[in-house]
Length: 578
Ligand SMILES: CCC[C@H](O)CC(=O)SCCNC(=O)CCNC(=O)[C@H](O)C(C)(C)COP(=O)([O-])OP(=O)([O-])OC[C@H]1O[C@@H](n2cnc3c(N)ncnc32)[C@H](O)[C@@H]1OP(=O)([O-])[O-]
Image (cartoon, rainbow, N blue to C red; front, side):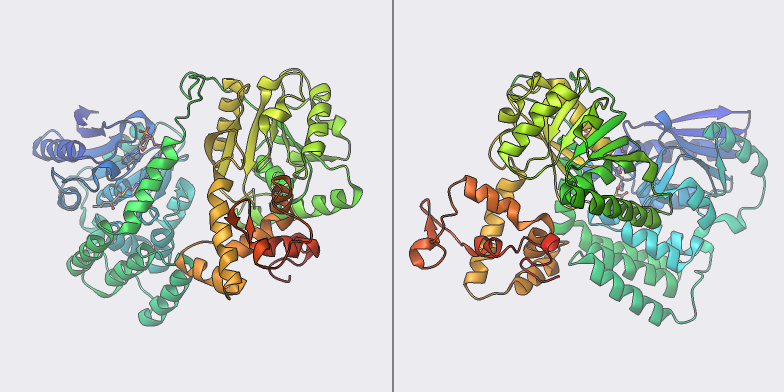
């Protein structure tokens, strides 16, 4: 699990070998401990390089081991032994150095990273904190404010940012291991007194209490009930206020509480579930590993309402050329302005240029003739969608995939409107489509494996978690949402207000309460669906009998709002006034 070799006569090269991400499993840790011992006891070895095989340094502790009886040498003493070594140890970082992987690198005396590498203390996203010394070493290396930012968010930094922050010593475009070996040769025999991060004082602003008070307040607000970010702040505070060894004890104590928490278990379940959905299959037997996607270079979005705008932005941000079509003059003008604004705000947040030139706008559906894939996002009306699919089928070049962003309608029926039903799938985004990570890829009985594979791959490229689902009313996402929304409406009937319900949900951890979310998505969409289901009967909006429909308790409150034209944010009024 870790191979040792002597290279360039005097450099001990330790290569982590635990595919696919060189996670620090018990065997990998044992391998590193053995290889380090060997390097330190070999008199011909004057310096050491640690790297990972297959272009990735290390994805951190082995998450699969969590919740099991963990055996093998623990990480903390292993990293201490590396830091205490009297021969310089250089980390050669390619691909990713995340969590325990970055903590291992921080235990080394020098770090050389490839320009495309990403680094981060990502534990907080798994409900944990960096507990192999990360919360104690990083603030000592880059200062408390920067370390707090990285540790409480788990965000990935590029090699360039890592260099600027002082996390790495050198960034290279060449072979990282070769450069690290050169580096190791150049530092052999040099004093390491100033290279052991655990011995550094923690650079700290004078008013530590005020700083942590302020940070804790901000983190509590953004954490929305998550306990790990709070524990991260407490651990970094220990780095700022206690000697290293006591700080380490505090780190371990805080980790012990998080490690067995329900939140950590849920987030780790989520981590694996998000990967498991990539291994999709269809009733026909078609599978993710036998179906070949086609590359998509140019895509079109039809309909620039709330969803279409978000989808167009998400596609452009992925680097695709996008044709955005809206036939209604007023909506067309408004959408152009809104889409540009969304891209500019996104680019500002990421410090990049907005990809404005990626989108061309048209009021004529003929403009989609040469695209590889179309996402139809017109209003949720079967007759309208039928017409659009009939048009697309004749306008688009041979082989163009036709996708619908319907939230509930029959994808197979839409496919039957086209000449090539095998090219039709659903791509159901969730509002706001350029932000929300969930994407349902809906296959009908006639969708080809290639169409599904292409939509799944495009979703992944867009940074979405794509889930392949069968074609049924409401698919999976909306079938889950229905009882959730229903219960929220019953709460209103029983005396709660939308603010109260949303407040409770947000305090629990939801990013948006259910009523705010509905206003954002548009209340008319669900209304249309309920009408289609025969649930909305005019003249039945009040009285106890109106509260039972199709044999189940029913709340007509959403219908009453829609009857008043209150469709949510887009009309300035919904559950709330805007
Ligand atoms: C004492 C405490 C110490 C420490 O502070 C705690 C930690 O380090 S906590 C850890 C902190 N570390 C993190 O938070 C990093 C978590 N990992 C990642 O962010 C991404 O996997 C990475 C960017 C590394 C690669 O992305 P990519 O190239 O798109 O690839 P991918 O994402 O599709 O994964 C490929 C396969 O590898 C699997 N697997 C991955 N990581 C681990 C792991 N650590 N372990 C086990 N397995 C892992 C993954 O399940 C998948 O398996 P499968 O069976 O094929 O579905």
